[in-house]
Length: 141
Length: 151
Image (cartoon, rainbow over all chains, first blue to last red):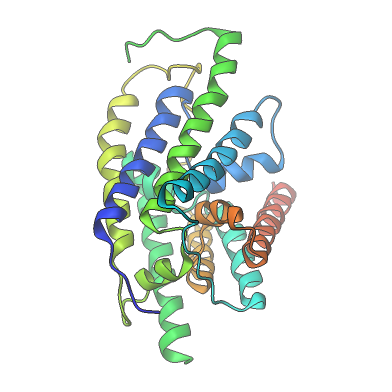
């Protein structure tokens, strides 16, 4: 599990994510927050589901296209045990809904418009994520 | 924005197209940056281990585009193909925001997955990813149900 620092592809990928957020805001007036887009599909208002579904389909298309460009699907290494994955999924679902956003909605779109709530949320989930990894990897191991 | 806003029926036909385009860019960005890989995300959060700061470069790239663009776009009166911008209305900090962000952070730190990469990773057709997404949706539904009850 050696760390592979890839600043250039990271930065370029980030530019594309920023461009995605700008596209959705300038054209549709919407925030590209993935938890919000998914959450809005659970009880969609009339006429509000179509664009959300197409965003998700686009997400899949983009992922598949990248696989075609790089000549193979990107690596997805998930070494967490299934019970922990279930707990993690529940926490991410509960937390993003309760806290009104995730890495994209708060971390990119919210910070980009200098939202105080998003700045606080991003600081809190970063700190909680770092603390969790510290406990699971360095205290419990 | 000086772009002519398109009226009613036409705009609702164009909107899904831009949502699709935004999704494609988002998926490409996640894949190129490597953030679709939970191990890479966990390596960013593991500051006491073999730290991989790539995620900070992803955030920097995204904000380098979004910050100037958002502030210009939001000075305009309306988006190209909709009547108004739909932005979060809450401005005050409250316990729900802080507790929610904390719970999300713990879940993020346990598996290395947040909603965007988790959904993108469904294309790998891996059971573990599908289980994560199913649990995530159940978590969202639980909060929606509880919040409706307390309202």
